[in-house]
Structure formats: C-alpha cells, structure tokens
Length: 255
Image (cartoon, rainbow, N blue to C red; front, top):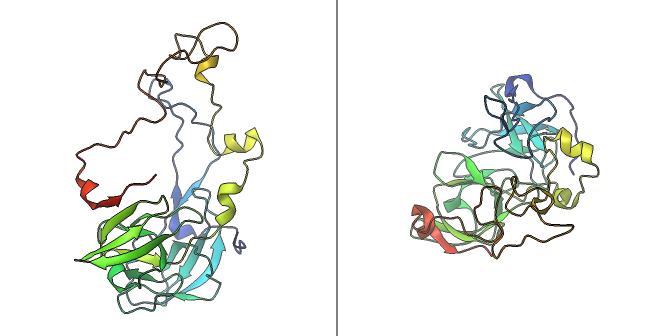
C-alpha cells in the first residue's frame, strides 16, 4: 500500500455522498444487506484526464473510502487540482501528462493508438471522451495484445479479450494496493462501517421468506436448481443478453 501522506481531502474536490439504506420511501427493505455505513465524502476522480498537454505534479497520496486503491492529488501550473488513481511506481513529485505525443511512462494518459503493444494499462475508456470505465480496482491492469483496423485488442483483468476503439484513452501502469484482495475484513464491525448488513442463508429461513427455507434441522436446499429469494435461478445462470450490441467486440469471453 502506498504511504498516505495527507489525511484531509481537497475541499474543492469533495461532495456529500448520500447514504444507501436499501429501503424505499415506505421504509421497506428493497435491497438486502445494505445500510448503516459511516458518513463519507465522495472524492471527484479525474477519469477523463482531459487536461491535454499540461504536466501536473503529484502532491500527495490520500485514502479514499469509496474504493480499494489510493488516490493521488495532482497540482497543475494553472492552480487547478485533480485526483487520479495511484499506479505502482508513482511517487511524490513525479509529473503526469495526458495527450497524444506523450511518453508512455507510469501515470501518463495516452490514446490506445499511441501505446506500445504489451504495455500494462488501467482506467480504460470504452467510448472516446467518456472517461475511464475499465480496470479501476486495486492491483488491476489490462494489456494491449495487438492493434488493427482502428481497434486495439485488450486483455482485461478477467481474462476477456475485447476490441476497443484506439482513440480511447488509457493510463499507463498497474494500479497500486495489490494486496487489497487478500486482506481479510477482520471483524463484523468493519463490515457494518462499510455499509454491509448481515446475510442469512436461505436454508436457515422459513419457507415464506426464501425458496430454500423450511425443513427439519440442517436440511439442504431441496431443489434441482437453487433459487434467489424471488424464485429466479441462482448460481451459474448466464444473465448477459444474447443479442447485446457489444457482443461483436468480445473476441474471447472471460472464464
């Protein structure tokens, strides 16, 4: 994990993050296992990296309660400040830039057409100018396998190989905090602070509450196909639409 160098966020880049209690206007639970988290501010992250050709200096590394990777505060010569996700190898005092004719070094944001094949990248756009949507979690990185006909072949962290328009931007490097996935939560209280309420197994409920409920003692699910609380198939059912428009851009499905 990167050393946190500043404890308070930049005031101009935060806003109140509304709580999600998982209840509707009548107070009925509509999304299970949500509610009761700590108050948070949302840090506005610069996923678009649209300050083209202007070099910014890394001022500090900060903790962000809304994601599992640290964020870096970037100060630009015109006085403006932006937050970006911290890649491995980025240090305080380094300069990062966005643009076409920019060196492919850690933290720089470049269109896929100008990034060398085999380079690890993160914060990848799906549509030019929309901002990064892919590979934004701690320790993740995608790789450029090839380029042809205005598209780049990108191997995503899931193993999926996908075509992405080469005008889309991506940031160089693998994201920091690789150990986040292996870090245990530790205690129930920490889950509650994060807004996660307890989960109850379906087999431990009564038949009125869950299709797996009922029975004497430690009984199993009792069904050929396990179901959700609302009777739909659970565990293993593919929910992606067969005729989805973006299917044409997927060269190899994730496993």
